[in-house]
Length: 212
Ligand SMILES: C[S@@+](CC[C@H](N)C(=O)[O-])C[C@H]1O[C@@H](n2cnc3c(N)ncnc32)[C@H](O)[C@@H]1O
View 1 (cartoon, rainbow, N blue to C red):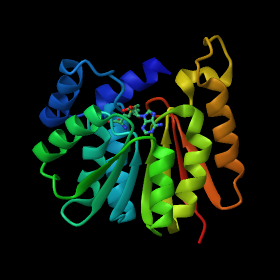
View 2: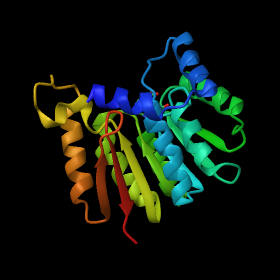
View 3: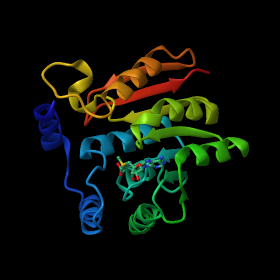
């Protein structure tokens, strides 16, 4: 899994000074180095762009790496709403998206994502693209909220669904979130309102399409 992903990143990743600065800023601020992998970020940009999504919701901002990748996909015409537990992380993410030229198109809601999602649902907000990348124990709830907030045909991507390969129980030590990811994958695969597939890129991403 690691070797395959290192290979993918080494062949398909092109140097990106801005994203490398984001990674450095996260380290300098003593935050965890858990942004999406370079290839996962590139995939997010391509999926937003290919789908033509203009209203994007992200759960888990950290330092803005994936936010920039998502915004690059919609260019000058879209908007990203990003949910983040930590005020301090959202501030760094915001300063990084400003550097990337998307300052006016990205807004942050801080605090527990479940609370923010309930607020968005109360306001009847709708989105056409979702990226789930926060606390794993709540992935199932996040998926249900995304479906509730989705326009027909919307895409929902969730990261870390292979839990470093531990979901297949070979010789990989289980992670804290292995069981949560197994349950999430079953839910995404069998949900009556979704059509889903899993892409083994980075730590694994599910791609679900909300049925029309
Ligand atoms: C893996 S990081 C996100 C990485 C980011 N998507 C990227 O690739 O640039 C997970 C983030 O989720 C946030 N988080 C954790 N629990 C949360 C919660 N209950 N509500 C909102 N955000 C949460 C963490 O503070 C952290 O910044």
